[in-house]
Image (cartoon, rainbow, N blue to C red; front, side, top):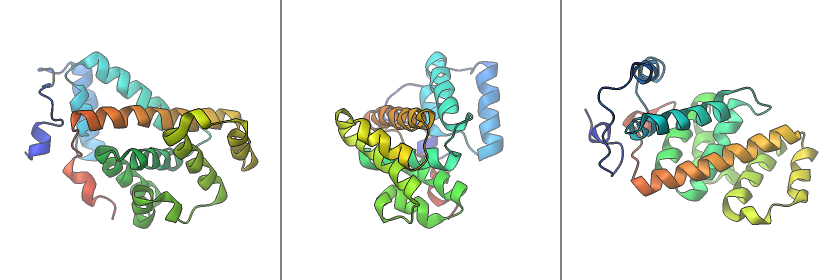
Length: 191
């Protein structure tokens, strides 16, 4: 077991032991599908109600039906995390962009500087909006929403862009505040 597997954050908050059967099953599914339990889940497992709230919101925003593709939602996660300099999410969601796109360069560009990536106008507008929401949310105005509509986003899509960006702004701060460590497996994945 690696050091980061022993303690996913700098806080002394051990996982509930034993884990409830439903949580154990969820972690087993993670192991089966991902080959690991993401440290963010292990970090929240000191309080099963908090873990369940986190996973419910994450699964709704990132996996449920949306006008945004899974790749687009991961791109938003990485851009927000890059601007916030969240180590955990840059590594974990950078790997997801590499996986979903099949393009390691895109994953790296999202982490380093999304503006250097070869993006279509729709993706660029989406990420510019997420970036502005991250760095200057109070300055969002109707012209910003109109810019998204002009490249084909619906009002529901705008809600989803804002929700994904908002969620990762929150989780980035928790991950940074707690010293959350990305799983070692993320670093070399899908390169």
